[in-house]
Amino acid sequence: MAVLDRERDVIVVRVVYDGAPEAGKTTSLRALAGSLGQTLYSPAEEYGRTLYFDWMDYTAGRFEGFQIRCQIVSVPGQPELAQRRWRLIKDADVVVSVADSTHHRVVESLESLRELTRFLERTSAPPVGVILQANKRDLPTAMPIEELRALVRTGGSTVGVVESIAADGTGIREAFVFAVRLALDRVREQLASKTLAIGKPEIDSSDALMDHLRSREPPGASDGLPMALPLIRQVLAENDDTVTQSTPWNDVSVAVTSDDRPRSPDPSAPSGSIWPPVEGRVILQEAASTRMTTHRLRSGGWTAGLGHGWRIFSSADTVYGDVEAGREMLVRVARLHAACKSLLSDNRCIVLATTGQKTWRLWQIVRAERSLRERLTDIQRCTTPEAAQRIVEAATLLCEIGVRMQSAPCSLPCTLDTIGCGDRGPVYVGLMPMEPLANPGADLTFGIGSQLGSIVRDTLRDRRLDVLSAIARELLHNQTPHSSRILDEVLTELAEEPKEFQTSAV
Amino acid sequence: MASEKIINENFERLAGDIPGFIAASLVDIESGMTLGLKSNRPDFDLAAASAYNSEMVKQKLKIMRALNLRTTFEDMIITLGDQIHVIKMITPGTFVYLAADRASCNLAIVRNVVNRNASVFQ
Image (cartoon, rainbow over all chains, first blue to last red; front, side):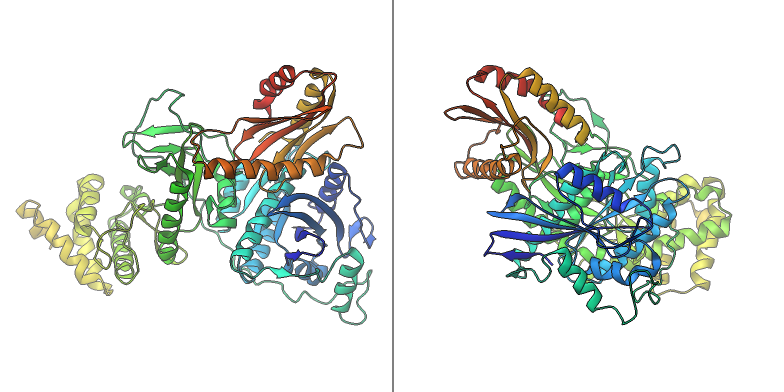
C-alpha cells in the first residue's frame, strides 16, 4: 500500500505486526510506542485481547528526499478473527511476525508464519519482506535461537529473525528499523517499476482503518462476537523436510593478517547493493546473524561464517576499487541469477560490500542445501538394493537437470556436488559462476558414470560387484527416459575396471 | 548490531564524558531512523536532525563516488556558532550523530570520546 504523498512530502508505508495469539504483538507495539515516544491506539479490546488492530502513526527518517510515515498496525491473533488479520496484511509493505519462541508455543507461531508467507506469495510483486521477531527470549523455556532458525528454514520461506523481549523492549526497535528498511527496499522497487501509488493514502488514520474493516464485514459481526470461519484459512501441507545441514567449505582456508581481512557483508548495506532487493536483505540478515570472520581460501577467494548453514563466498577477482565498477558487476551477476532462477535452489543473494580497505567486494550468499553427494554419504549403511536405488535416483536427477539446463538461457556444471533435490525436483545448489559459461545448450552433466563409479569404488568397495549388478537390474526393471544413458555411462565406466568385474556386473 | 539498551547505555556514558552534551543518536543511513538515542534538551528535535543528517551522509557518499575518491568516510565535523555536530560512521549502514554545546566543550575531546566509544555501537 505504499503511497507517495507529494502534497505532504511523505512516503507512507504500512508495517504490520502479525503472529499467533498471545505471542506479544500488542506488547511489542506498546514497547515500540514507548521507545519512539508515540501513543498506541487500540480501538477495541476484550479482556486484554486485540479485536480489530492496534495503530500507531510514526513519522521519522528520510527516503529519496521525502519523510517516511509509518502506519504501524498489529492484527488480532485469534483464529476466529482471521478475516480481519488478512485484510490488514493485504496492505502491508513489510510484516513483522511476532513469535512466542518458548518450546511449547513455537509450533503455533511457526504455523502462523507459514500461513503468512503462503498468503504473501500470492500478493503482487515486489515481494513483501517478512521478519520473525522471536519473542520471550528471557523465558527459561525459550528455544535456542539456532534451533528456531533451523525450524524457520524448514518452512522454506525467506525470513529474517530478530530476538526480542517485548516485556522490557529488548530488540523491538531493532526489529522495527529493520522492517522499515525492507519496506523501503520495496518502495524503491515500486519507484523503479513506476508502480508506486501517488496521492493521499486511502486509509490515513485509525478511524479510517476501523471504518474500512467494518464496511467489509458481514452485517451482525461485532466486536464481541466471533466471526464466521475465516475466508482465507490456508490448507497447509506440513512440510516435514529435515533440517538442511551446513556444508563446510571444501577448500582449505589459509592464514591471513587482520590487515588483509575484508569486512564480511553487513545487512545494513545500502539499497542498490543487494540483489534481490527485499528478500536479499532478509537472507543477508539471517546469514550474518552471528558475527562472521572472513577466511581466505587457497583459491584466493574469501569465505565467511563457516558452519552456520550458509555459503558466503567472494572469489579472488571480484574486488573493485570503484563502487560503480562493483555495481556494474552486481547487475551482471544478478541478471545471470535471474536467467537461471528456475534451476537454482532458493535463498540466495548477492551483495556488494565495502571491505573496509577502500575497496568493494562482491559476495555471493547461498543457503547450504544438501547436494546429491551429501545425500549419498551414508550409503554404506544401506542394503545393496537400497544403495543401488539411491545411486540410480541421483543419476536420474542429474540427467533430468542436465536436460533442463540444455533449454535454459544459462549453463551450470551438473555434478553430484552442485546438484541437490528440492521441492521442485533437482536444483543447482552450488555457487553461481560470475560469468555465464561459454557454451549454453551443451550437456554439462560431467561424466555421470565416473561420478557414480567413484562412489561405488570408494564407498562400497567391499560389495561393488553386487552394487553394480543391482544398479543394472534397477535400471533395466525401472525404465526412465534416462535409463539407457545411465546404463551406457555406467558400463563405459566399468570398462575401466578389471575384466572379471565387468563380466560379473553385467 | 548492539541492542537498543546497550546503545542507550553507551550514549549515557558519552553524555557523562562530554561536557556540554546536547543529544546523540545511532542512525540507520538508509531510512534515517534512529536505533537508539539520548537527548538532554527536549527542544532539540533529534529524530528530525538524525533524518536530515542521514541525507547529508548519503549525499557525501554520492559526492565521493562522483569524485572517484577511493577512500573511506570516517567522520564529519560541523561547527556552528554555538554547537559542534559530529557524525561518526559506525558501519557502512549506520552512523552516530552527536551534538554538543560549543562553549562547554572542545572539538578534540568530542571527537576523541566518540571515536573511543564507536566500537560499542557495532
